[in-house]
Image (tube, rainbow, N blue to C red; front, top):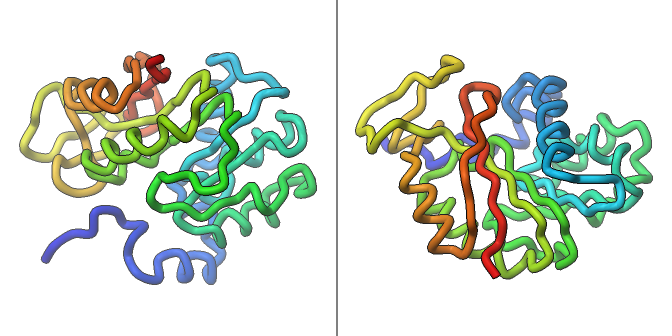
Length: 222
């Protein structure tokens, strides 16, 4: 039986999870810890309250519930395959939902960023490409670059293998990744070649992230 390219693409996945009140669980757990790590990554990269942030694959606003109070009102934008999931996060997880206009939450499963303004300063996709195959990362980076002309930094995570491994791999934090089904791992050369081909200068960061993810910091080539 063929596996879906992502568990989030199983029909009815979001509707079932939301009906069960599992809006936190389905974005990967470690809710507070991971949100704090994402905020620290962004602040270490130079994000300040006046900057505009795009949270790609925002889910139920695990990062948003921390970024929205920090940023100036209206400076947080988010995309996800499920707008209903983001709206649940806005309604349940934000202390002051008025700081986040509903039209800043945009349903987008193809990384084409419809309606996202061009003056975004920072973008982050945390735990997104870990659940998608390499060709989706390739297409996503190609689509995002011309849509974000003023971007200071794109930050995204992947699982990596030490070489072009053909079978499962246990990551440093215990999760088992695969070359052909989620969660996916890629080798470093593959990721760097894709970044270069799609117009990004990118390098892995050595910090330890939840489940052994690797942070990639990318800037657009002029």
